Length: 289
Image (tube, rainbow, N blue to C red; front, side):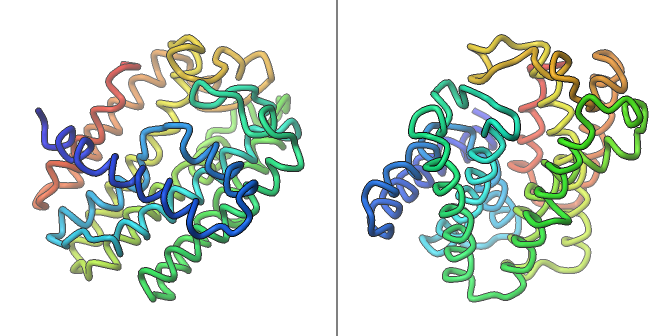
C-alpha cells in the first residue's frame, strides 16, 4: 500500500465521522441539518480536507480534533459550491456523486439555503479551530469574487460564447478560479497553520498551483472518457451545452499531454520536502491518461 493510500484510508473515515456528528450536533434545526448533511455525506474523495491534513503531515504537525475541524470546514465550503453549481440556473445537474442533487431531492429553495448555510458554517469551523485571521482570509478569498464565484461567473459568461473559445488566457483563468483556488487555499492554510518556513511555503504553494490546475484538466477529461455511472454525475455534456474549457481548446490528446507535463512539474516542486503522501495525490489523475 502506498503512503498516500495508507493516509487516505486512515483519515477519510475520521473526516466523515466528524462531519456527520458535528452537523447533527451543531445545527439546531434538524430538517435543515438533514438537508445540509445529505450533500456533505453523499460521498466524494474528501480531496481538499485530505490535502490540508497531508500538508500538515509533511510539515510534522500533529493531527488532532482541532485540525480535523479546520479540514472539515474546508469540505463544508466545497460542498456549498457543489450544491450551488448543480442548480438549474447554473449547471443544471440531476446527479452528483451518484445521488440526486440537492435541489432534485429537496427542492430549489431548500438547496440554496443548504448551500447558504454550509458556507458560513465552514468558515466558522476554520475560525473556531485555528483562531487565525490569516486562515479566514485565505479561505474567504478562495471562494469570493476573486475566487470560485468569479470563476463560476466566467464559466457562465463563456458558455456558447465563440469569442472566448480560443482564448487560452481566459479559459486558464476561469478554470483556475473555479477549481484551483480552493485547492491552493487548502494547502496554504495548512502551511500557515504549521508555521512552514519560507522555502517550504514556496514549494508547497507551487505544488498546490500545479495540482489545482491539473485537477480541472482532469475533470474536463472525465467528462469525455468516463460514463455517468463511473463519474457519479452526468458526463458528455460540456460540448453539448457549449462549455468552453481546456478540452474544447486543446482537444483530448493535447489536454492529456498538458496534464502529464503538469504532473511532472508538480512532483518536482515537492523536491526536498517530506512529501511522499502529497506526491501520491497526483496518482489520482492516472485513470484519464
